[in-house]
Image (cartoon, rainbow, N blue to C red; front, top):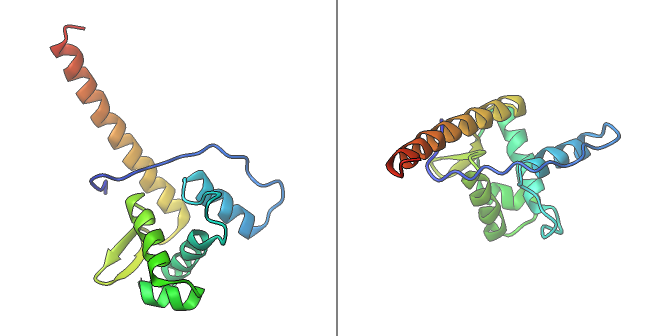
Length: 135
């Protein structure tokens, strides 16, 4: 399910030393390039967590619901949702949003498939370029 213009970022970061669900979720999102140091109030992380909760309930949520629940402006929520959609992690269903899949393991498997597909496309184009350049 590769989306056009999907931006996939994988960052190698050290896994937390101690098992703590919040630290592991932060590690997960940081490894996917979702959270950065500029997000001082961890608003993207908080949006991601709410979307994860709604995935468990199999219930999409609106930006207004997220803004109210997280005490954030709708603009901030939309900014983070757009970032999550650009990465292919979140999809919209009408005027509501949800994670692309129901659980994190499945999400990584989908991202892995997207990466493989992208690499196969790049190999094909590289081969065609090489042939046209006589390399």
